[in-house]
Each structure stands twice: as C-alpha cells, then as structure tokens.
Image 1 (tube, rainbow, N blue to C red):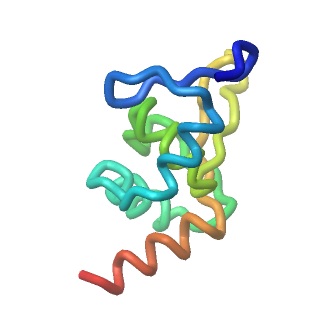
Image 2: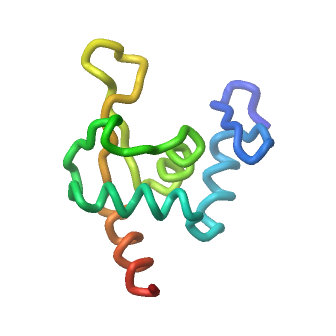
Length: 102
C-alpha cells in the first residue's frame, strides 16, 4: 500500500486507487452502473450531461471512472465539485455490449 496514493472507499473498504481500479475491472457492471450508462448513452459520447440530469452516486462515479467509462468536468462556479458527466467511447461500447445481452 502506497501511503501517498489516492484512497477510494468502496463497499466498506478503503482501497489504494490502483488496487481499486485493478479489482473493479474484474467485476461485472452492477445495476447502478448500468443505469448511469443507459442515461449517459442518450447524451452521446463526449457530450457533457449536467449533474442534475444524471443521478450518479460517488461510488458509482468512482467505479465508472476506474473502468474508464466516465469522465467528470467541474462546475463553473465551484471548481472542486462535479458539474458534468461525460461518457467515453469505452463506456458506450460497454453499454452496447450489455444492451445486447438483454
């Protein structure tokens, strides 16, 4: 465990970000991740979706970012807060692959 690395709290555990990222990619998408990808897919890849239009919790956000499916952009007034969610190409491909299994 690197004492200087970013920490992530998930499922009651405190992870180093690198360990969290390696762990998450081995797991299937959960229902909240699927719901967020579904909504973001309607905005399209690279199109910012206002945080008020998309309900994404912090844990879901961190899981999608660890998978490289989601990027965030800050609010204009409060730069330390998430203002926009942006779907990546990888996120759209994951959504389409999941949608094909339904």
